[in-house]
Image 1 (cartoon, rainbow, N blue to C red):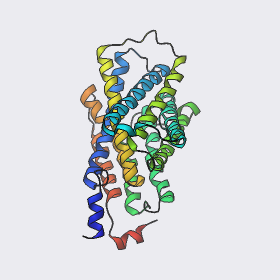
Image 2 (cartoon, rainbow, N blue to C red):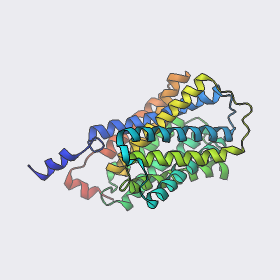
Image 3 (cartoon, one colour):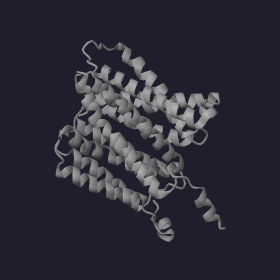
Image 4 (cartoon, rainbow, N blue to C red):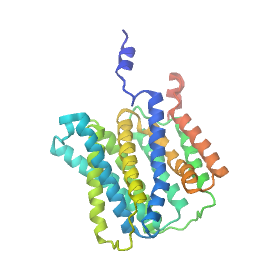
Length: 321
């Protein structure tokens, strides 16, 4: 039996291309579904659009619950392996929870409240672009090539198209666009942290504990809010539970994908998030599916295909930047 065949037999589903594509798309659509779900949740709970403390509270509950759900799953499937084994792992999980969950969503919510949704979506998509670029300098097997550069261009075009005509301007404020850029920085940093930390810690546990710690920090931040007008309904509780489940599944799958794959290739799928959010908003909120959304989706899919397309070995070396 050849070495290549032995290696192929050892591959798990997070390394097999068809499964990688399926799980990456599925995770992106799960995150995209958060847009209409949270919008309906805010309406059900009578939360004003600029009520940041309430949004941070909901996010804290959502992520804490998501982490606990993953931990319960791990307890029954991984038995005695659910504990954090060392102080080093504890520190890593705590830091990841602070960066990936607490700081990222803190900056995101405040930034989005002080800029237009379209500008926020476009700035937020820059994290995907930066991860692919930085992976070129960090990992020897994740170099940029013509296909990747073209794929990035198609991805960014797709995000811009879906937001054209929605209030894009050149204004800039620190707590608006500035905080959105801070959110981008934390998203980029956390992706490389996950890739590094998953070498010594199981992705399931890494996802669970960072969500728990990050959620707790967000709940502590939310203590300064006034929630006297919040109205808790059965539908809002169901939607909150769903948002926790989607976070649990999406984060865990994504961490496993990052562990076994090149960040520069996997991250491209995240360009699908704003488009899937638009499509699902049309389904659940009655918003129109415009030609822009269709063109955007086609552009992003072309980008994903280009980034993940295997180049012939001879051309691969020549096309690397």
